[in-house]
Amino acid sequence: MHTIRVWDLPTRLFHWALVLCVVGLIVTGNIGGNTMVWHGRLGYAVLTLLLFRLAWGLLGGHWSRFSSFLYAPSSVLTYLRGQGQPEHSVGHNPLGALSVFAFLLILLAQVGSGLFADDEIAFSGPLAGLVSGDWVSEATSYHKNVGKFILIALVALHLGAIAFYKLFRKQALVAPMIVGDKTVPSPVPASQDNARTRLLALVVLVLCALAVYAIVSLGGGMVPATSFA
Image 1 (tube, one colour):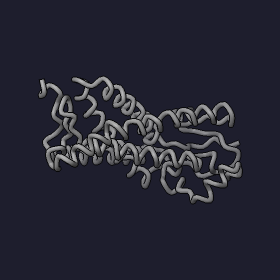
Image 2 (cartoon, one colour):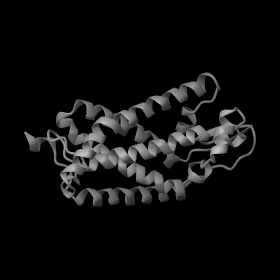
Image 3 (tube, helix red, strand yellow):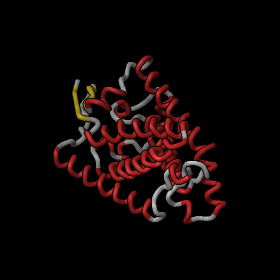
Image 4 (spheres, one colour):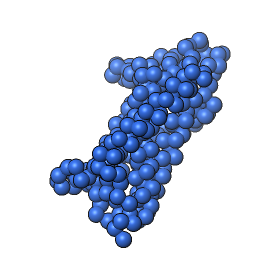
């Protein structure tokens, strides 16, 4: 057996930061009122994290790179038949890869629609004033009535998958995302995770945060709930 670094520290921090932010978004979105100020701030944080993950999918450790879990449809079907390859149990397996890309897509759509949304009560996205009323209405409807429920369904599916792999396949998916290492039966490439790569990740994160700041500044920033009092 071989113990290798699968998830580098930046990937792990991204994962748990995203978990906290998504939970916060769901809670504040359902409470409404003055908490919508924090809903907007968490949305900006999620957008920053998503941009970081897109960049880290090209620059990160071996198993964090998109190239390590871009599977052909035939590989997904083979995995579903129980004929997966050994490397499928190291990083993201074909189904896990689909989950990752689904989360990235839905979260981008949810945060993107939030930038243009306006519920006319407690929240106005920073870019709502830059587009037509019809666009704002569509973005708001998707954000409140469609995207939110798709996201909650994905979270529930993700949690169910973790439980399934733990109970029925005896594969722990949470522990490696905490400690970074995984024990595998055969030698496979390890993810580079050192001071240099962590500094690179910090630089990338700062650049992503500046990009989000620039986007938000285009419309003058989120209108706080107190403005509607």
